[in-house]
Image (tube, rainbow, N blue to C red; front, side, top):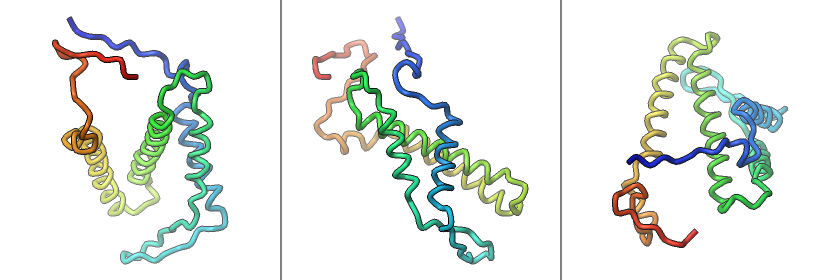
Length: 159
């Protein structure tokens, strides 16, 4: 018999913004922290790319994520909550912005094609990092590993 894990609607568990709301928050925070601070750097290929000299938006992002921690006591590990929320939002923003740059007709085709190849390479690398569990025993050497869906799976009392 297959094991079924029931999923609860996310909105009932945590204070939730939609994907669009989180991405707009990141965009607004970046723009706000860069206002009047952008500098132009000439690159080898002659394109002028801006670099930023303010990372204030990351602080704003962290505050917003921390403020979204459920206050009703149902969450067991705030570190994992913050890491998950921050990671998902930043990764989603990175992937969507990277793709947008590939498909922006205002950019030179040669750069768009290079950006697309890099986008695919990044997605492949991200997927590999998320799925590859070979180093887990080295990272958590005292952790015992037992598939919770295995025929002889064991259950304990630690929470």
